[in-house]
Length: 162
Image (cartoon, rainbow, N blue to C red; front, side, top):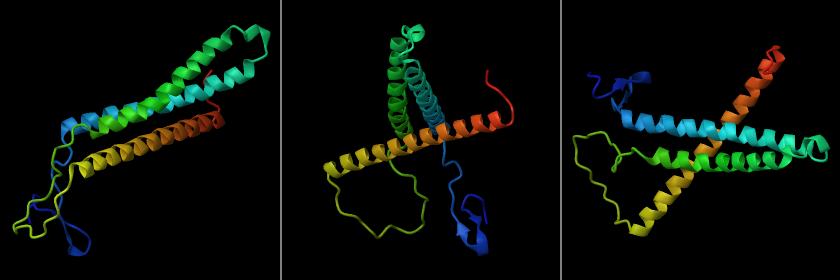
């Protein structure tokens, strides 16, 4: 059996696989989208830090001048934390081919589908984008959780940030 057709799986079942299913352009878009998700997580953590400082400094006369600046930064961080997953979802959609990749078969396709209206394809595109937004937001949240867990672990080990 050649490696182009597939490789044997468990119990001798043939698993067909495409050799180069992720091209370099697509990989670059995925890396950029992942960086945006990570940036979203960092902005979310900076927003939490700014809100904590604001609530701790409100009412203290020596920090009264810093509160408006911190409020501006909190607005900036929250805006970036919200916008970055949407941009990441948009970038995740870039680099895809117009047609889905399918394995070549030696027999003709006998199943045909009904004609699809333009409204349905537009709704499908919107649904796919919203699904990518959900994935990007969950990935950003996962980055935040991992960052917090690593910080807590380092704190428990005695490594201090300051």
